[in-house]
Image 1: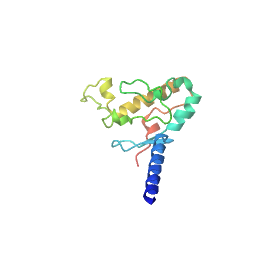
Image 2: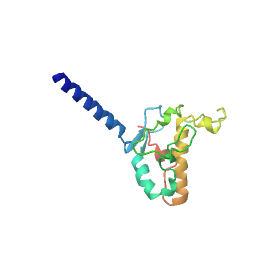
Image 3: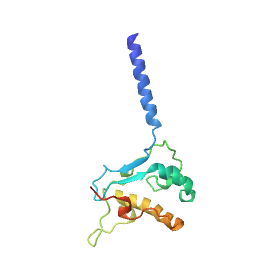
Image 4: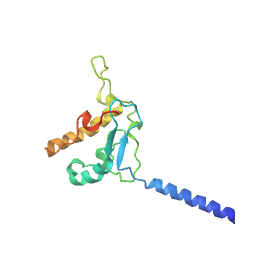
Length: 154
């Protein structure tokens, strides 16, 4: 009898933890850290601000909802994402750390090759949207320069 009770409690707790994982939401603020060494300060991103507040304030900038930031391996928007959807991390596809090589001795890379670099993917995605916002909603300003998003490294 006692063994059955212990097993039942363990199974119930396992179900509780599993269910919590299914419905876990993305944190309000995401820190882009850990995946790669950085030369600039750690960037933080307010997922809540973008996915809830800005989507309501500027729906014309988010025609694909979550898919305006999240895409599949072919670059197509993931339009059907919900708040509790599981998505791959950016680094799972954009596997090269840092920015694409630059300068006169750097190899010539096409767009797809550049997007293999995680920083290029972030910059294209974020700056593209921010530049569109700035054109449409001036004088409001979304960040587009290095120091706007990357605080000085301490």
